[in-house]
Length: 413
Image (tube, rainbow, N blue to C red; front, side, top):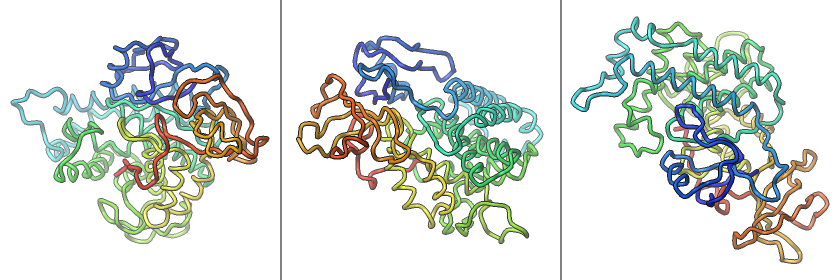
């Protein structure tokens, strides 16, 4: 199977992974043959990439960090919990003639907020993710999720929690700290629950005033979590996950020292970023690069590495970035590649996918070529690049040749 851009989806393509509605039910099952109407529906849902079966790739299986079903169930539970909260505080389906309550009005009734906010649901998701990660290899990250408009923030928070947990393990955090961090990252954008509906569509173009209100989610999230008596880890991450090492973040313009995010003796310097929040910030920026909202080109692993290096030190904690970079595989099974060098000239521009990574020499994986330079399907050409040393490849984005990193859009701000 292979992940392709929606614009590459052809009538008759068979789905290799089920597609779910935002409400959690299966809309299209594995094996479903695509029709023109379905392509239109998927576009309307904001789904811009899907997994399909492709001749020559029958044996290819992507390597999920945790099972897809666990991720989907987690996203669904978070969505239901958030929609229930918004409905109970008066932000559900609102009569056009009614003025919805402002975040400040909602927070002025802390007992009501505490009563209707289902913290237990978030704790359940955190526990489920924690149990799955016990069985995962903590040295390599695989994030392959598909984005949809309706569940964008829930999908993002689950994947950020996974990345943050892997980082915490690499810094030898205790199991309790790892599980606390997972919960905190799931909750870090909880302040969005108080915002008007139109601000929650990740594809909406915002005015400066709307952008400023959206940035207030950090303060609102902190207030909600303090009302609900969550741990300091949770409230600090909600408040500080957009802070930057050079003091250029928000909302408090805190600074960092770029030191490893480990426990130290004595109190932290005044005005410094919490170590858990520093991990959350790196996780968020990485996930924002490789799995942005529908309509924004996802960065390849190599592209994300280049971008993170640029942010390291001034924006993101350099120690955490360095650790994350060691966990990002240069090539994973299913990655799209293009031949750039071939002494015969015959294969230059041919496109295929990685079938097997090479842990010893990551730039020389096993590949299979399935499209010619004109984008036409060809009989599969399989090769091991550690044997074919005269052939070089580069990553390409779904549906297009890779763009320069300067054109990347970082969707964590």
